[in-house]
Image 1: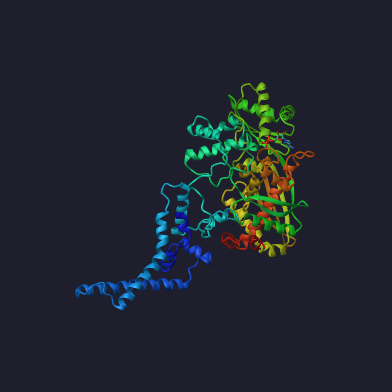
Image 2: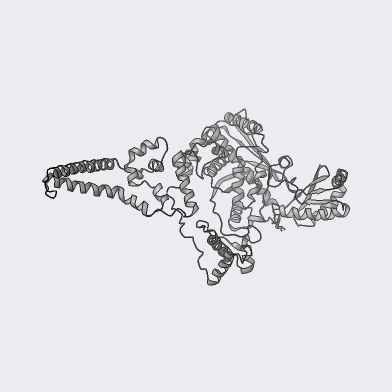
Length: 600
Ligand code: ADP
């Protein structure tokens, strides 16, 4: 039994000393109190308190009696070993109460002394214990992993934490999980990686076996750092599939649960949308939004624009020369030439425009191109490089300072994406009937319209938001991105969204829309080809390249993202309007397993 165990389980002494604990817990809720509250099986029966109290009273009364008898015998010089009947009975009762108390309180005490792990045991154990004790001592109001319908909840901090996963099996940290089947040859390679003779990054090319390379790297890492990777799985991933594409120097993979929201009824079709998340309530919330949308005939969407961007920065000797290149690029005749140079780099990349911005003698050229079903960063970078090489002939004094000059703008909040768009620009709308707003969303059209104005429009304006005129678009975007193998770092601009709500049909129904100018998704390339991510794309019917109409799979995926964002916005806004947020979180964070209870 580890110290974690001791602190998590109500030990008998602690339970027996319930009165003092109770007094203490008025100031600082103890882990014991949490468990007793949550799990009635952990409560100590009342009669045990009585038995313990009687045993303690008997112990001390008998001890006092025997000691006073002993003192009298010494004073009167009577032999100590000659016992009267009451004395004999008192000795026997004293022994009995001692055995009982020792049995009840003593065993766990001695066990905890004997089995306490050394202080230098794995850092993560200590870390976890500290967290538990901080929670216990400070009564910290911080939720565990499943906590939010949106960013709001972290701020609200209303849910007292359950000390992390009380019933989870403690991680075995004393010994790490050595990969099965290490050969003598492997041991030699591990030793040479640990000694620094073989670079860890070279294992794949040296061994020609990606799984073996990962196993050896992992083992060498554990030995070198003295830290266990138990809990981070090694088996179950095709290491060949990530080589040179998705991740270097792999030692395992992180597991993220995938939940399904839906059916999302969008443009006359139904989608079951996979969401990879560790945030409680999120899938249930999106699911509730889907239900409201479906009951009103579904949502509809339009892809307004489809073009990935890349913006190199070039420098000249003067602002005049920079301006000359700007005018050159803006001439339609030159654009024809440049687009044929650009397009020769790929079957799918097609140049759409080059927008220029000058800063002194520096020029930023924002190329935009369609990229088929790929998200397109690699594709556009190749095309841009071709054009820059071509331009160098006519502008030999041009210094290409960087193929990306941040006017693109990738993975950073930027007004240029919000205004001009990047990737797919999508608008998605639905009309939600008044009675669905009341029965499913448990609020009113009026309350939703007012809250949307106050929160998503005015509140965000007060905060100086850039594309953040929504309740929690990034929650939905990121969960779909992780599930379907998109680049999760692009959630920054992909989550730009303005949510609008208006009363229609004489104020009876709700018109709701989300406008998202920068959804950056692909169904080929990057992480989309990995087994799990590809299964999620398959579920949506957008796996891989669309041969008949290149680009239609990725555009469809972008509309699904916007559709689920619409569902998420509806549900969270309704929860806030109805004051349900706290209730729903209390339910989930109290480990209510039945999702339907909250979503219905
Ligand atoms: P990204 O540009 O998003 O980083 P990659 O360059 O890694 O993506 O992957 C795109 C690759 O997929 C290109 O080599 C492209 O030729 C190929 N491809 C095959 N079919 C398609 C399609 N329908 N749309 C886009 N790319 C496709």
